[in-house]
Image 1 (cartoon, rainbow, N blue to C red):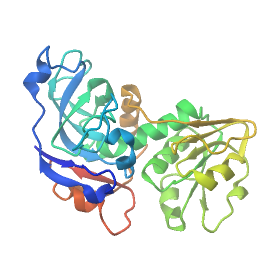
Image 2 (cartoon, helix red, strand yellow; image 1 turned 135 degrees about the vertical axis):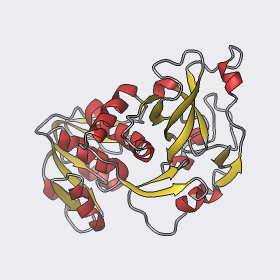
Image 3 (cartoon, rainbow, N blue to C red; image 1 turned 90 degrees about the horizontal axis):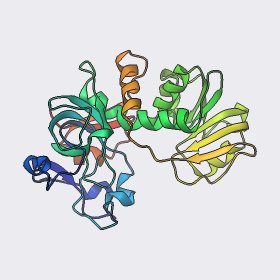
Image 4 (tube, rainbow, N blue to C red; image 1 turned 180 degrees about the vertical axis):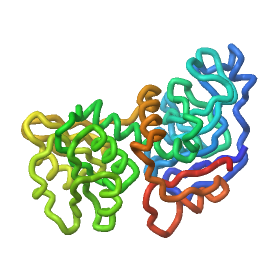
Length: 314
């Protein structure tokens, strides 16, 4: 099968190479001796890639901490189940699915991928594979940050950093759908995009004063650094700062600061798929490229807006 691999941790996306790799051994998967309990094989139709995942230790080591290379990156997938191992429940061969793969195993920038069944959810027939791959990571990150960790409620004020990006635009839509007042932030050029995705207000972090937004109940942070520190001071008593940038560098005076790593969740994926199908939220996809053109797409010299999705099959 065709796959994108990386072998040099210091090379970044420039070190990506399109190669031929063996397809998953379905016979071994189905045997008691070779089965990884609960796995399925997915014929990949579309794959998403997170820009900084080549910096993640899990791209280069397995669950036991042993170095692994070459490694296939990409952890967002939409495709069709082609085989099941023992313990794989809730899915069937031929079913359309989407979700996230394990961080420490080969990923989705390939024609086939082995995934734990629990990390996948059915993809409705009227939702395109490209949309499914584009919404999996962004949708789950936004959902978990807002509702699991941020405990967002209707009527609250939420500050969403990076509101024009893939994750931020999803957080903006989900927060507004939940009845919150959404204040988006980002560069000047992102204002219209953030507003189009539902932000009630927008702060240009280069030219506007962040503190002018006043108190908020929740900060959804994808930036960190000084912006995170300034944002923490805006959190009202009992509020929360949620970040995906690592351990919080600042904490609200009378609130919580939480960092988290997104995990796949079948029920949440199902809710997100329903919202997409009903037209209540939409993906922020900027570039769609083929697997043959994936290396060039990830190394583009032009600044791209939205998420880059690789369409593995037409």
